[in-house]
Amino acid sequence: MIIRVTGLLILFAIVFSGPATAHSPDQSYIFLTITDEHVEGRFEVTTKDLNMALGLGLAEQTSPRMQEILAHKSAISAYLRERVGLSVDGGQHPITITSFEQLDASFAKFVLVHFELPALTAPAKEIELSNHLFFDHDDKHRSLLIIENNWKTGTIQNEAFISLNFGPDSRLQTLAIDSGSSLRGLWGFIEQGMHHIWIGTDHILFLIALLLPSVMVREGGRWVATPDFRSALIGVIKIVTVFTVAHSFTLSAAALDVMSLNSRLVESIIAISIAAAALYVLWPVFAGHAFWVVLLFGLFHGFGFASVMSELWIPEKYLVWSLLGFNIGVELGQLAIVAMVVPVLFVLRKTALYQRFIMPLGAAALIAISLYWFAERALDVDFAAGDRLRALLPATESA
Image (cartoon, rainbow, N blue to C red; front, side):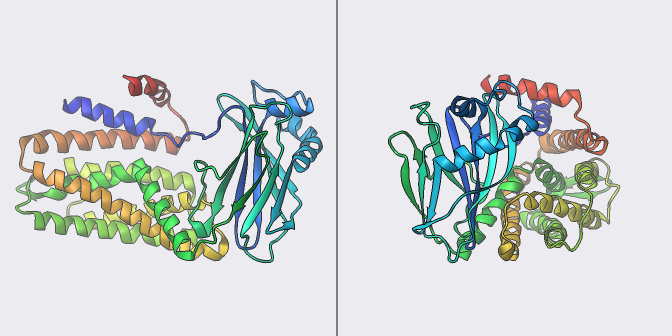
């Protein structure tokens, strides 16, 4: 049973992957980013639809080369500007195309066309959209409007919630813009911080490696159960506080561009930090210096959080608010993990199951995961073992 659980832990950690795409066939998308001063966005349309409407001959089953797309940028731009109109608070706002990209989905190849509107003189209250994309060629086509970013409403990199759904019989629609508030923007980044620590498997495993011995004490060269919950709680508070102070410092410093480190170095050290923390369970080589070790590795975890935060959309005027919210979210997410894990470990701490199996085998599994990740990150390679395990994941999920 323990071996099976350990194997699943390794499998989960190696195959853990990012979020799935929200795209679907027979749909086009308009994503908007809204601030007090401007509105910008992008169209996401398939090569199949562009070929159908304009006869471009772009590849549909394989990814078209950017040279092919850019060769038709004038025709694509003209079509989009002709077929989509945006009016902000009753004033006409012509679309200016700024750049092109491409996106591969398993079922279709998308062309991404970025655009912007003229600067706003006041925060937008409503946007009227006239959308005639592809409906004349396909009456089943749907075009979806999505507010991707709006700081004051706490909307950050949204691809799930659709604001408007256009079809042949609903080509003209008006969207009311929620004015929001700074507090809602702050809460949006608190949610982002919680979300990113919960999907940050390496951060979670480092924390678990620290918590495994938190309900035990060293006596006579071996681990024995801590006498009461208060003693265990004090130890956990010390560890978590040191980790929090360390990663909060470097997260803030990196987010404010005070300092930076090479991301490959940071990710490699984060990976090996799990092995260092787990090694303490098997061989207390850091005895008497554990808090300094946690402090050191916590600094690198902060750079890791900063790297994640840098990928989020953040208006410059709200950078400090965003940093505060993200930091609070990380700490709340971390406390939630501690609150779930520590009581279970405390209940199990006196059992032979915990002392002879869960602690040593759990530590061994964490070391194996850590070394695997470290080798991948340090050498900048994807080992075949990871690819094979990821290939088995669908069968595992359906079993």
